[in-house]
Length: 364
Image (cartoon, rainbow, N blue to C red; front, side, top):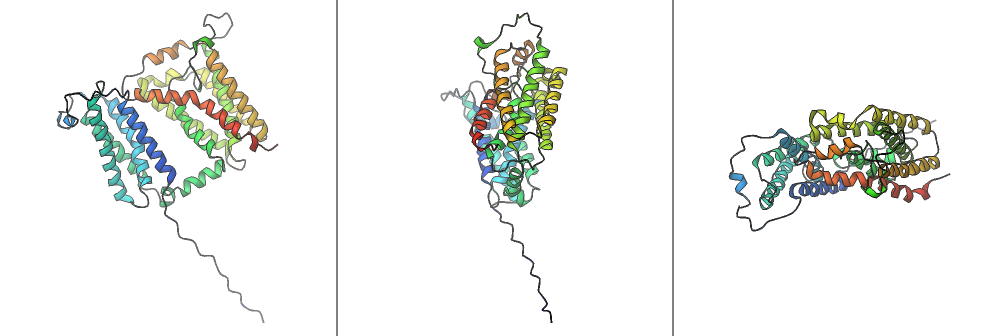
């Protein structure tokens, strides 16, 4: 007689709704950046006769620049998006939406009032309304997300699937697209320290022009980035697809930022046939080195970044690059340029530091 065995199925654990610390840290970072962009250069004149709240009663301007409205909306969109994450699980859905808009209203209003004490700034109701609208749009983007995303469970699972335990490389990849926004001598030409004594004279006699320079810098930078990402990501992860997605998002962000900075012809300022060929060489290198071991990938990325720094700091500055710096608009986006330039200049050094830190973990 056989005893009938009872199959016991494991019960599912209920989802644990918990705060997402990384989202809260990112929110504080966004607040600092927004305050920096709104209050720089911090030359407060506290004896100003104007009251801080007079801008609320001021009439609307006759002409409202579309550029200012767009940048103000985009500047507060991440704030609204991250605020929904930050208040989870205490506030959810429409409560989180209303609280996010309220906080955006208070933050923007406070910064506009502080601008009344800055001689070079003008407090405006248009900026305030645009910032509130940006907060609302950002919060609406986050509102449909499931609790698994709002608590960071899905985001952390995705990060671990791609990078494993190496969080430093994950943060490095997050910074990479933003390091390309500020105008560069050639696209991906990060790490320019601006030391004139290192520059080769532009009146050289070698058969080397600006187009060849763009091709060389882009090829070296994209090849180094390919090796770096292959080294940083897990072997079982979809490495090639992930690198192509990062490249595509970087180009899309650069195109969008160039449209804001230089108008409808923004892409023609930084993109050329030479840049396209250099990127093609980098993608071809990605295919060749994708089967190498971690040791070889480490050396390719490390040496490639050093070569990139040498090229960027010694080759002559492109006249078209110098012209870009002259025609940058004097709008709100200009206040972020110093920060974006700092990220662009320090990114290769930060990558080298992380590579040196992770050298001991490379297995032969």
